[in-house]
Length: 454
Image (cartoon, rainbow, N blue to C red; front, top):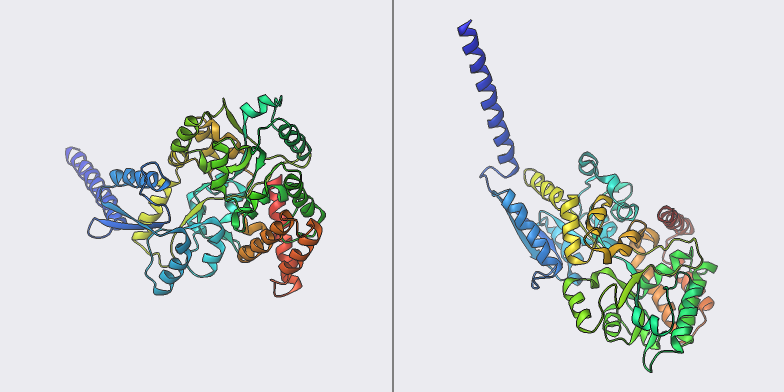
């Protein structure tokens, strides 16, 4: 009996030792045979500013390194305008970072170009796919497969100066297009010279299309059918705002940064602006100009055509992915790092510090408790629409250019909305190789809009 007990103890010890050995072996395999592994992550987030997005990303890298002493993470910075081109060159030479990164409108193009690896199975095994917002799922899906994961997002809302509202006897912000026009009319009669009721960006860049899309989509309009009544109505609203002097013609030249400057200097009562402006530094700067969130200014939903309609905003934000060259053992560590970055608490912490919105619904709930000023953006993110999904996929860039050129013609007074958008719609149809291809993309755009409008 004694021998049997000793034998059993010996067996247990051996099994336990083998388990430890195998566990360590698996960990070492993940971290390379030398017990040390270096991961390279490439983004366009600059790390120069100690309160910038890049800084907070590096902080999370350091947290991961602390938990995994055998892993070293190197961040490679590439300017925004150069990133896509660099990724294509890297993919062709098969010399790619271990984790790649892109703006969400570029995901489909990069997937087709062979830059990203299909991570469908990895994501499905992970078990968090259904926690992503519908728009974030659409942003990273191409031909039925998942090619990246949307990490954080941003969108647009209506900012308004409460002090100016009070002076004009306005107690609540506008909720519909009709109310918006009424508020603008009332403000115009009460405002000092050179102060306008509202401002938006209609410059000849993506900013104009991006800012116009909430009005277009909330009215049931479509970038692939600008000649529809709903699309023309949205453009007519913008035209009315400029024609009536509620918004200055300067909107034709203003970028989104200009809107913040004029709002901060109290030259604009309302602006269409994004959550990225609500950083710690910017909030402190607003305060210096007599604008404290919740007291002197507030943020609400962009007005919709009619009561009961849901505002649909475009989804901004970036995505992480695995390169097409990704292989074991580095891939396992890269995936583990992504799991760390996409953890609900970590994602919420990152977004809380950077004025961004999490793409996981569970993370949104965590973050909003500490950042009530981001609540409107967080709610809108749940129904935000990725631009390529509703704008012809890879042809979105061209479609956007045609759209904003038409917008500029109307706001400058050279064409009427119906004529400008009818001409633009014809140009957009010609981008497709056949009528059947056009109709297929139009159908997909309508379905994407329907999905997020539920």
